[in-house]
Image (cartoon, rainbow, N blue to C red; front, side, top):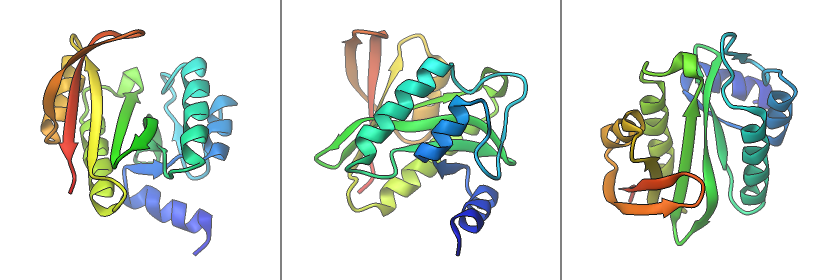
Length: 170
């Protein structure tokens, strides 16, 4: 099966699709990766966020793949999810975002559920963690609906006070 035919069948079946360096390059140039299309009425992420995610994915991807995914609904890229730091002792730490015009439709909840299913099948992963802003109720609900448990709070230098979450996958 070629990469393109695998990717096309993956787009039809799955909500999350591995995001490659080529895909990041396309997104940074305002184009959609193969077999997908961009949200027409809002960006999935600002250019500086895409650049940061591409850099982090490349750094993590040198030792651990996949490290980033497109969130796709009916062929349209509605968001992104990724590892936001290198895995350690079986723990992966994720972040995610959705185009503002596609919020509150359940896409992120389904995508994170699919990401957890992938993690359960990957023997390298035993724990998935994430942080949410204390005011970001929608993101907290995404994690709760996917079985994450609040484990505490911390102060993030960029985001301020955040709630820390974990989900066991073994």
